[in-house]
Length: 283
Ligand SMILES: [Zn+2]
Image 1 (cartoon, rainbow, N blue to C red):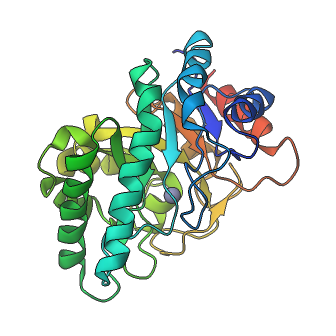
Image 2: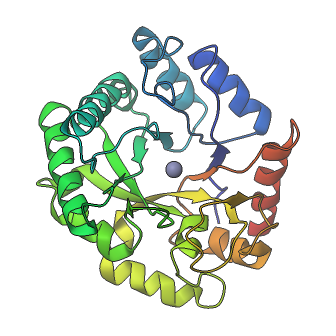
């Protein structure tokens, strides 16, 4: 088996070069970052002019696909039209910022939380998300957008494989969308990854198709099956546990995908240690 493509969600303060330095520190082979502030303001540190050079360094160092995380404020399923419009325009801008990286030859995805229907109902929410993505891709389609599997907190859309499949069906060019499999969220949503890993994989393949899954958010879960809480735990310290993560990293389908840790940094070396731990499980 080849080496895991793994890294954590890194801070962009200091710009492209600092991202890479932080990744070296944790010995990563991929990573995530926010393309703008968590509240949606344009990034001051990620200068568009530096994107190409950044990509060249990643390629020279044989990085795996990057999995950028869109800010949490985007809500393509919002009730308020101005909220939806903001999400559409901001996501199109993010794609524009990052496209030079892909064009340089470095694989990169943008992961989004599909959206929250805020009382309009899951069906209406999924439809709005598909429509919103179509508007995004009319403007910019240089990078594949990954819909994250959600825990089902509040009115989140994407809480089941079926909801994600419905959203994907609403996108005109399916080549523009994929899925990020968040291990904590999938357990939270009610899929028994511990007791029936193979059954969950079969279901994922039947409903969405394993070939659509492009990235993993590798998080343990503070709460158990079907809790809908969305509280990440450090690797091996939650309800998923190390036997599950061994399963994950040795799975021929999922183990080859870029894996992003979104666990708490308890000390300066938490992520470096967790990366080493997961690599060790492969052996
Ligand atoms: Zn997320």
